[in-house]
Image (cartoon, rainbow, N blue to C red; front, side, top):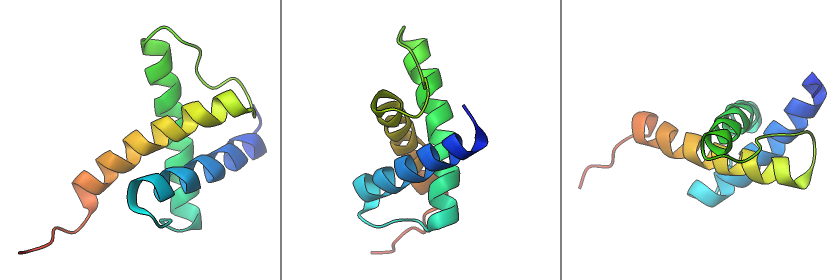
Length: 86
């Protein structure tokens, strides 16, 4: 897949995952980065469980990337989100 394809898939996956996890986007650059990392993590997770990972710019790859991006965002928020004091 080309760099442009990864950027587009990463932006869409990162945006959707941000909306799923916290209801608002993290910002354009962070959405792209987390989406691309999420696509790699999602591909690895799917491969680990015996399925095909990211195959190109298609709906299946988008679903894999969004699932991976949600996992990455959960980890990101667990490590870097400010803690609220009660």
